[in-house]
Length: 135
Image 1: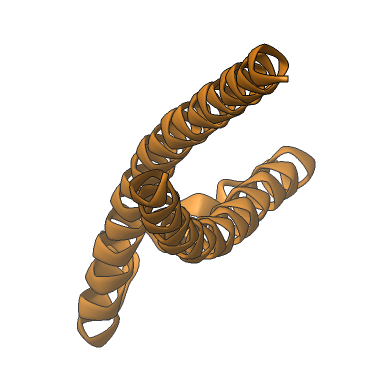
Image 2: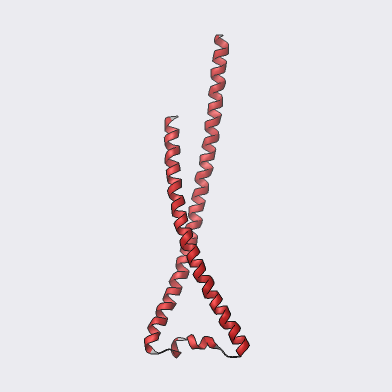
């Protein structure tokens, strides 16, 4: 019984640690989601302006139309955008993995609690039978 309690405590600590990791990953994923949302909103606004004005303002943002000093900044921003998308995908994958493991651990914990309560009921039944027989 003591071993089961020890395992349950260890499991609870692991779950708590996993929950902390999930919260960190979720926080980062939400931040990246906000960045992605604002980027999409920016592109939608540019498209709306292009439709209304009949001009293509996105051509202003191509690397060829930038001054040499701005080209490196533009390249950095493009790389950062790619990195952010990759990071977001990684965080989402990690979050899915963590949640899968969390669900598995919770399922095991619930099953062990059911088993423990069944064993407890069997022991109570045995004790009751012993008392009834000796009485």
